[in-house]
Amino acid sequence: MKDQVQQLEYVDPSSLDDTTIIKISEPGQVSRLSSNNNFTNQISKVSQKVSDFWERLPGNIVNFYHEYKFLIISFTLLVVVVNALKILLAVTGAINSIPLASTIFELIGLSYVIWIIFRYFLKSNTQQEVVNEIDSLKSQIPEEDAEKGRRGDEI
Image (cartoon, rainbow, N blue to C red; front, top):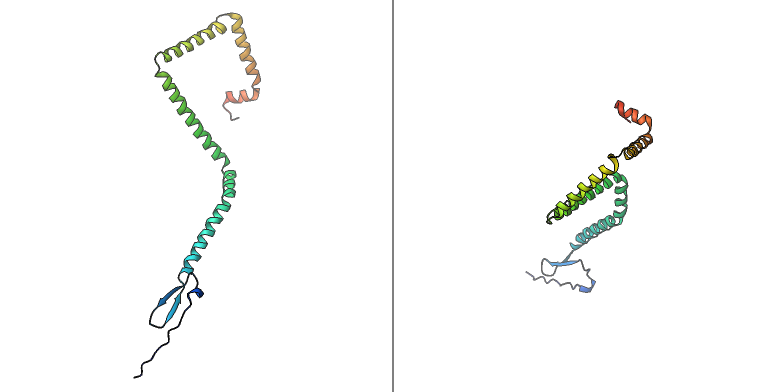
């Protein structure tokens, strides 16, 4: 038997791509596998999708706002009112915890009610002023709306 001598092939590393993997299966045979190309293609596709998403985001937000404008405004107002009530209750609780503060505010409210009674309801001429003011407010309401309200019809 004659020994067969295989000539080794020289591969210049500078001629290979960055994504090329060299695998030696048998002595003297060199094969190239390009497994990183698929990975880089997937990365470029994902990065393109992310880039497209960020490009379209402002337009999508504007379209969403125009489509659901009433709901967004209603929800925002609801959140603002709930937070305002929480703050108001917290301030009221803080004032109530101060000694004598709640008693002083009750006295101020009671004195204001007494002043209104003395000012508008004890003298006949001031009572007439109140009646005239109520009549002028009634005259500002359209008559047909008042009739519909009395009959129970829808406005």
